[in-house]
Length: 387
Image (cartoon, rainbow, N blue to C red; front, side, top):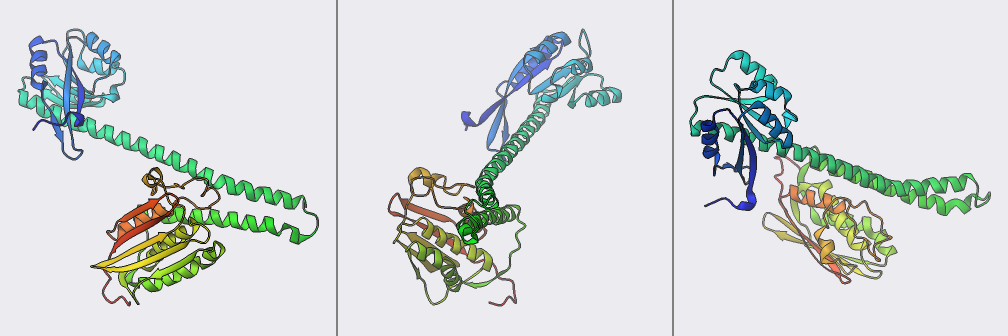
């Protein structure tokens, strides 16, 4: 079966040799030749151009840098080493030196100039293809590495930009309140400043949560999070999560209900289960309508459990659902504008669920509510661990 054209990438090969027959033969050998890269699910093909002298080669190298340079050592006007020394952007392509009388000195000098490999004359089409295949794989891997490094730089830049934005607003608010208090704007009575102190404390608590969420996220992604796997009763853990969200639910007049068996044991890290259940319940209350309802349901499943959390709240559009689990993502509309959050909770939730070989399904209708359904598989409990 021919390769998918969409997955074929062409590499530009420049052949420099003063023998017309050699140039033509090498071109024919590479015509239609492809190299499969199964690790990337892609195929590399080749386009070939040629030059007969060093001067012509330098002109072509200046006009357009190739991916692979097949360069004869002995040319009519200069050596291949001279071409490499004068070539612009020599580090942007891989050079295969062609020579009929390779010596150690030539090899050392060519390697210092950046030669990737050598091909001794006379060579067969198979030998040429094998050498070019090796060079093509190296070119492709180098480009992938550069692309990944660039993506990492871009991710770091975006991460720092978003983090700075998330911290800038609460810091500015706290600083503003402190200036107002220093200037005694409300007079000498300390009680007059209580609302400013309360708002500052709330802002600082939000920043602390952001920092803790970031720490959780980096520990999960680096694999350095310490885990203590034991038998955890999800029903008991859910009861504690309900207690923690009770004050928020009362302030928003949201009824919270737990549907679960008397107990439901699962092999897990207690802190991770608390993170999952608290995140689901907090969101179900925060993004609910006043006087709404949130239901947390725990269902036994073979080798684990299913956790379902439904609310009668704001709901989400299809567009919002598509970007739900991104980092620093918060749904911003007329209903959510004043709801605080780090935008990391669901990203962390997804990573924790993945630790248990599970998945998350979300169904939502804008203006009517949202349901999260998680499947969790038992993590192996070390022998001798108390339940």
